[in-house]
Image 1 (tube, rainbow, N blue to C red):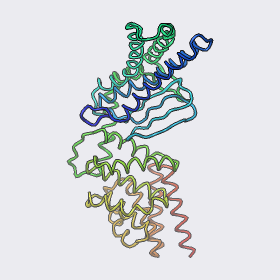
Image 2 (image 1 turned 45 degrees about the horizontal axis):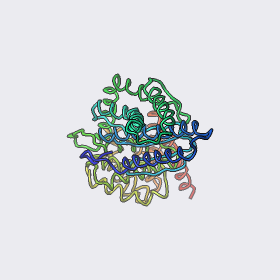
Image 3 (image 1 turned 60 degrees about the vertical axis):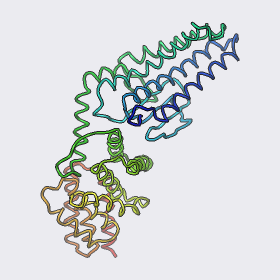
Image 4 (image 1 turned 90 degrees about the vertical axis):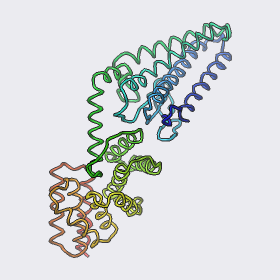
Length: 394
């Protein structure tokens, strides 16, 4: 949320401007309907809207101060009215302004007090609304008839403060989410364990792309990349995978990834393309695998990805040359071995070596069953079987 020098990013300034506009609309509507029967309910409704908007803005400001990268800011629930991405932060405005939330990317190197500031920023936003109303009344800046009407706005802010600080779970858009108070308690009791788990996952992911001298330092870019790669690998529908693929490509283009992270992202893109068989991605597999291999020409996992890409593109002999030593290596991980065996089977079948193709295909299926491979990987193996059967019939 910051540029690294403590400056607010454009998306935070945009959210602040939105809150000011909403406050101006409230004052205008109040002047229009003053004295009518609709005035009290209107003030309650608008007080809730401005309270939620300022609550989420408070979270944003806390995240900006603490350099915590934000993934999503949502105001309201129900049907989506507007959605826009600023940098790597998505903003959503929904029909019913009765709740909202701010979701951060996983960060393991931020101090606990920065997360506390982020969590408390929401209620501080509501406190700021109360202070603003009290200040306007104290200096006589508010119209005399509006003084009593501001009471419902203050009551709504107090309600939001109490609800959000109480340690419980609230239903937001069909999902039960922890309140700020519950997250504060979890921060005090579980922050070290969660940080250690995330750090271990990050180190494990990058260990395949290092030469044993990996210096583990997570930045905000690293946090976003960890989230995008994890969700990319778990996504099952085409639209979600496309969104996460685009996010990873933006990180590559940003130029802030370290060498190991670049290889990790490129390998994730290549692997997804190989598993999905997506024709829209197939044309880019060659460039991605070559780019990764230039960064780590000696790394077995990248050599395996390159060999699989060559087989996918019809260069069976060249792909076999890269994959055969990797399939025979004892130190290869089960997933890398599965992919090597699967694409070796395709290469051998295309080259007319039926017995070898069946042997590699059986080995790939055995590994898949042993590691309980994901449905997407099993679908890839089934697709390969169908393709090999069609080659055999021809």
